[in-house]
Length: 305
Ligand SMILES: NC(=O)CC[C@H](N)C(=O)O
Image (cartoon, rainbow, N blue to C red; front, side):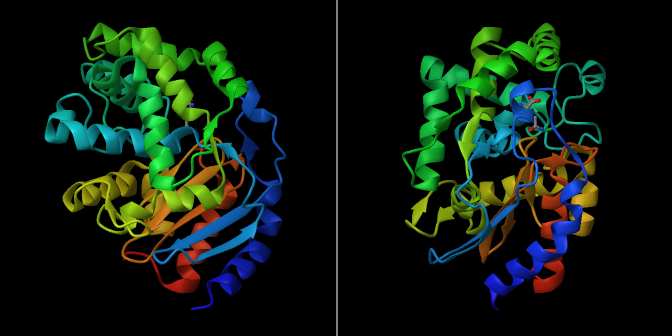
């Protein structure tokens, strides 16, 4: 299949939608972006890539980082992780507080903020002061790119304005599901969200999830095949919060979004895809990104269903 031609068709078809949606502004530093940008990259197992738009442009990966921290935590703790954070869809927005009280501070899944904060805590218990460095090094390793780093301004902006996340972590702490210092955990979480990557790097970084946990470019096993299956399942069912059902319905691929405007998606046994467009729909997922992926599976028949 001529994937480059498919990307060119998609770029044409999404153009009218570039005016729709809204850039995230509850983190002020996130609002400072050129909101008409679009980029999409496909990475194949042999390293061939297909790109359209501004695929060198780096944006903050935000909740896409939750995929990497979940991978690290699941790898270390195995099933024990689920005593602290579940693997069921929440049906609630990414930053919701309500369920936590009913469910005794055990977040539904690692992809909502509450779950990612608990996941960060489980990593701080292992890696202590080196936790963020370990997360960043892991991302550099799966992406095979040493140049990846955070945007300090976005990190500071989240620290200053992340009132919801402070509320979440305090609520969870009151149920004894945070074991380390609140500051250490929340800073780890905000730093992972402010990591900057472009669509080429992100599509490469998640390729191991399309290949039973083995990075096809290096043949390195990142995670067991059974755990890779589970991560993909949680992406499919929870990767887009209360729009996960809609994403599965329209796109039909495991995917993870971030409020920075990025979405990664995995085509098992074939490729990884990343799309970027910063204006979001009402659920906090890239509006054009979701549409572009829907067009992709419609045109290629590469949905998993
Ligand atoms: N959905 C997201 O990407 C949310 C991440 C963002 N840093 C927050 O905590 O609100």
